[in-house]
Amino acid sequence: MSLYRFARFIVALILFPLYRITIIGKENIPIKGPVIICSNHISNLDPPVVGITSPRDIYFMAKGELFEKPFLGKLLIGIRAFPVKRGLADRNALRKGLGILKKGDALGLFPEGTRSKTGKLGKPLAGVGFFALRSEAAIIPCAIIGPYKVFKKTKVIYGKPMDMEQYRATKPSPQEMADAIMQEIKLLQEIHQK
Image (tube, rainbow, N blue to C red):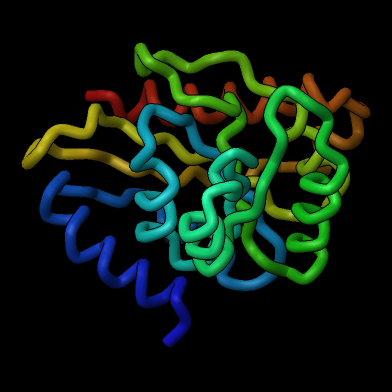
């Protein structure tokens, strides 16, 4: 068993009962081929929660500073995270992400780039739009509805793949594409908030 699978098993054992995680729409995630799962970001728990609720193994970007700590850096690499320099156009991270998608794997992105302290959706970064437009990946919006409170229900909702042909026909900029993805996440939140 890989470190990723082992970590996912252990984390699932802890988090599912602790936060009474409910998954909606897991069947919307294609089992094969490149996919980008785009989620809102309300907590440090979001990456592991998306990791344990998705049927696919996911590669995540993580802030570069985390990889500077020797043990943590090795652990993150073992669980399929790779570094990104925040606040910059990090060409290495962009190449790595596109390489993951080219191999037909799944990439997890948090379009806001940082956690929302209020739980409200923030402005997305253009990077998510870049990946959506430069790859052949299915784009799956994901809404996490918390807040994470012990023994209170947390919902993870996966929407249907976005119709990328429709978007590509209008030749959007990466920022416009990122805004469209955030709009889909917002709609999922609104539908399932109750």
